[in-house]
Image 1: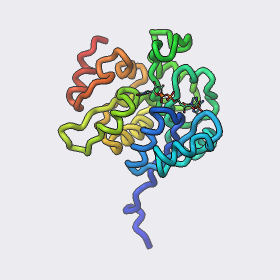
Image 2: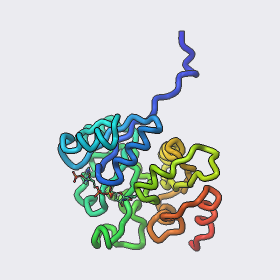
Image 3: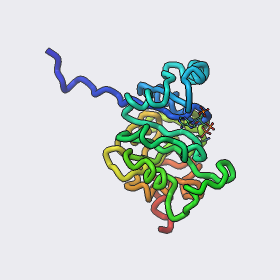
Image 4: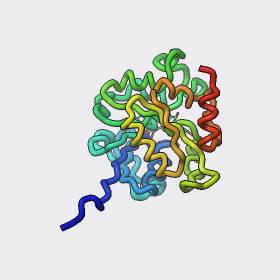
Amino acid sequence: MTDGASVPPPMPRIAVLGAGHTGPVIARVALAAGYPVTIAASGDPARIALITQVLVPGAEPRWAADAVTDADIVVLAIPVHRFATFDPALVAGKVVVDTMNYWPPIDGVQEMFDDRRYGSSEIVARRLARSIVVKSFNQFGYHELEEERRPPGSPERRALGVAGDDPAAVKVVAELVERIGYDSVRLDSLRAGRLLEPGGPVFGASLRRAEFELALETEPG
Ligand SMILES: NC(=O)c1ccc[n+]([C@@H]2O[C@H](COP(=O)([O-])OP(=O)(O)OC[C@H]3O[C@@H](n4cnc5c(N)ncnc54)[C@H](OP(=O)(O)O)[C@@H]3O)[C@@H](O)[C@H]2O)c1
């Protein structure tokens, strides 16, 4: 007989949607942290088979719908200007990590995201009403995300924010962040996640946990 308490739970399965600059890096660091990973672009997985083999060996290229079906965590790493045509039904019922930044010089002016009363992840969550949206992985350049990983306790370990309205989903994503190689700093709402966006106090900044928390606290509300 086996002792059930000693069997670790299976690692959450991750589907990365987006196989451009950011998606493959997130897929690669998640794989390195021990997560099973699938990756999809907007079409036939045959089109990303070679990229996947070279850049993310060990990840499985799939159609987006197939990747999402089995996933516990869906990482949305597509450009904001493609989001208006993204099908919300695809990720219904899933925890969705929104990595997207709205940056008009890059994305063009996107009417959906141009309402400055709301953070971009609040807008994403409103459209993905049947998903649980968590904002993270938007604060670093994709190349940094891989290079700056450090083990727990390292004095150089950077902090990465994780914001969401659902504490259980935030916890799952915070664990992902920690396992990949960052200290997670949890923010208790997508609204607060505006602090993680371009122009906010921690965006693009290389901060340890205490510095990161201080930067969030001292930001005028
Ligand atoms: N660049 C960075 O350093 C960085 C850092 C943090 C966050 N981000 C955010 O990450 C997102 C992606 O940026 P990127 O630079 O990686 O973009 P990118 O290089 O232009 O990649 C776009 C990818 O998204 C895929 N895609 C588009 N619509 C899709 C859909 N409906 N379903 C599945 N895949 C879809 C494209 O697939 P097809 O080729 O099949 O169209 C392509 O693989 C952006 O929102 C950006 O703000 C970027």
